[in-house]
Amino acid sequence: MAHVLSSLRRPLIGGAKSYARVTEDICAPLEGRPTRAWYAAIAVSATALLIGAVAVTDQIWTGIGTWGLNKTVGWAFDITNFVFWVGIGHAGTLISAVLFLFRQRWRTSVNRSAEAMTIFAVMCAGTFPLIHMGRPWLAYWVLPYPNPMGPLWVNFRSPLLWDVFAISTYFTVSLVFWYMGLLPDLAVVARRAEGWRRRVFAGLSLGWDGSQKTWLHYEKVYLLLSGLATPLVFSVHTIVSFDFATSVIPGWHSTIFPPYFVCGAIFSGFAMVMTLMIIARKVMAFEDYITLAHIDAMCKITLLTSLIVALAYGTEFFMAWYSGNPYERFAFLNRFFGPYRHFFMGMMLCNVAVPQLLWSRRVRTTPWAVFAVSILINVGMWLERFVIITVSLHRDYLTSSWTMYHPTYIEVCTLVGSFGLFLTLFLLFCRFLPMIAVSEVKGVLHYAREGDGGPHGP
Amino acid sequence: MAHELVAGVFDSEERILAAARAARRAGLPIHDAYTPFAVHGLDRELGLEPSHLGVVCFRFGAAGLILTLGFQYWASTFDWPMNIGGKSLNASPALIPVAFELTVLFAGVGMVLWFLAMRGLSPVKKPALEALGGVDDRFVLALRREPGGPSGEALRRFLEAQGAQLVVDAEGS
Image (cartoon, rainbow over the protein chains, first blue to last red):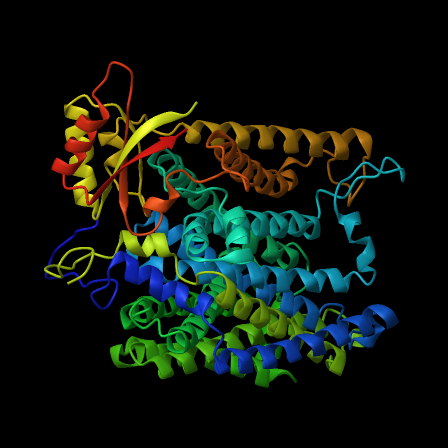
């Protein structure tokens, strides 16, 4: 039952909303004309996407010699962006699956857009290994398919192949999970729409009618998908970290990588969710749905993961010293004092120092302050990936192979393009699909609320 | 098979829960209920059996695990043996990540497809009693009119007595 009354609890949704009002509010951005702010935002993001598209076309046409890579630094911007974007996706699954399993009802206001964020982020991530292949039209070679070249199968013992399976499974399961969550809401949108929109949404809603017989199985499916997606989150970034941990490069060959990467992913993902939600609640007037309590709760998770990430940094440094391995020690001293020290300092500042502001309740409940913190965390987490990948590579065992890496404008434009892709997809999502899970919000509408005149309002 | 239904439209989950409970006690044939969100406890009041999809999910997952472990073992040990750093051809720990991912994929996607097929959800399906607002903000309880059972008028009176705002005759599958 939705009614849980206690002086200790606060309503999850602000205002005295009725069921019909919830539908009205959440469907309003889909049904009216887009605002000027939306047009301005999509103009900027589509321009960024276009810049990226031109850069990607150029590097595929000319070859990836257009990048700043060299014989020592064979992975740099591309894999940094790949790991960064995969990480961004993780908070979406965490909010939708893990918080669902923990019965955190506040997730209902943010899970839909967080899941959408996951899907778009994984799409951005996927483009980088694809481009990195150099010949993306042969990308299907990474899949085990019957072929006349042998019989030739892929190497199932390579972490890079594990990535293929991890990312594609993660994308598919996230997409299915998201679509399943959308089903009841698509039926609501279809019911209100007219003309071709009605036909499209009715088709997409698969004839959903709210039958209790369907709800019974649907809830089981949702629970089990959450149960399946939860270990998937942990496995995906663990496998991504194996790309590094199974190698012998100082700074990469580290057993702490799996939990450290997973926490970093959740940390950066939550920062991105907050960045997007703070804008969305303002632009779409969703303040009653995405309340300060939601931001406060997300800040607490961000703070916790920041502390875990800080602990991981400390553990890495301790182990570099304690292992007695001179190469490992050097790799870490090089991070501190080497030519890329500004990146390292930036990472420490953004990931360890800045999130400490979230101890303050006042900061946690001031949207612009949280927005600033979340942007800095995103910058910091991108720097972290750059430090791990490039800074570990640029000075290896042989001093004769030491070199510096500088990105070319093509690489920078590709990064800009990935942000363009992500934001364009997100803005289109806000425009065409309900950004908040209508049916789930209705289920928690009366949580801790009393005397508001019942579900159909005063 | 089409059924003749009498549907009552309620405005809250409490009312539909109470109506379903009363209908069950009175031994009336309940067809289904249509609600905008999952009303917990309503399945029990309607006398629905718990979902068996857990078993379906497990079976798909088990099939995925066996298939992918078997395939990887066969491909890397027999069909295309590769000597990589002198490691065993059957280095089973290396087979775990792919097997895990595909177990999850089979379990998740298989279960969802099973669910859609079982409930007949497809782009061409016409939603039942759509006009009554069961997907949006109303709670609809549909009773079946059966030969030899209570008359339509009796069902209508029952639903009205339970507080239904609107009672309509309908057809349902």
